[in-house]
Image (cartoon, protein in one colour):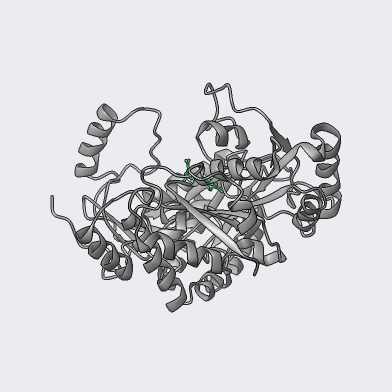
Length: 447
Ligand code: PLZ
């Protein structure tokens, strides 16, 4: 099999030259189905050989417009030049020593960057892990050790991972939790202010959530409140203004560790380094992953030094956490974000997409809501004339886009959200072409 070089040198074009899947992908699909657990889902029926900026190229030579960035991971672009170079240098120097055994500077540098870039000017410390879920698990460990309390409060529509603790914290049953219980205890779920489906003010919904915490859990039992400042898998729900500040205030007044899960929203995705910044929120702890390392597996937990240092020595760690190759990729990714001003690029993506999507909303009554910030934008679909979720049209549009060479992702508790998470280096001509295709698929699906 010939492998095209990835990265931005790839032609930035949509080019579909075979049926989807093409013959080579079809062959791999058969092998995949024979070898890979049926529990691992597969959205696209094609196999990648190269990717860069706005495109993914498959084994049959088809070039897809990538509106998903591997679920908000390749913010700096796929196989970004600086990341490739840093990884190549690091992999040739050493691949692993285990930071807990023989430390290396890359780990320290990533922690320094996290401490500097995350919201708040207070003294911070960090620790590194392999996946988002692992970072969230460690946020809970640290908050419990610090507060000597047990309860963890999470929100409706929240998503925090697939491990046992984070399954308990994730709201949606199918596919994440179904048949996998029992789940970790001492996890409590309260309402979130969902602007499209709840007309109450952010303060009103926060008061309801706070009352639940107070009366049902007991504020003094709560170690941590964990929330995504914009809910990702839940359908790109940015809580109604005023909701988050009220929750933060309650946490502060009651000695509760406020944890922002910025695994999907972080690293320039929303046009700020972190989505908390939109409402001036300063979390006590913040979890990061995905966009941090340009596609290499790395996650971070960052927070107030006194909280992060409250754990006994040896209490945090793992064999691979902060692997040197992943750290080299993170340092290069962060450099790229600064150099290319990816916050500005995320805002430019929003400026290009929002008016087009709003125009589509006035044309197609199935589009109930257009929302998002920066390059984290979604459409929520309804049955016309009601607020009933419309997962059917959502999945029809997504499938139509896939067959036409545009990778789009779905989301939402009701499966009725189309979400767009392009690389922040996505060329605008491809963005416009993706929007044309999405519009065409709405015409077909609603004809
Ligand atoms: N917290 C806010 O978005 C991962 C999940 C994909 P991991 N979201 C993508 C899937 O179906 O598994 C996510 C997130 C938020 C935590 C996580 C978990 O991060 O790196 O997937 O463990």
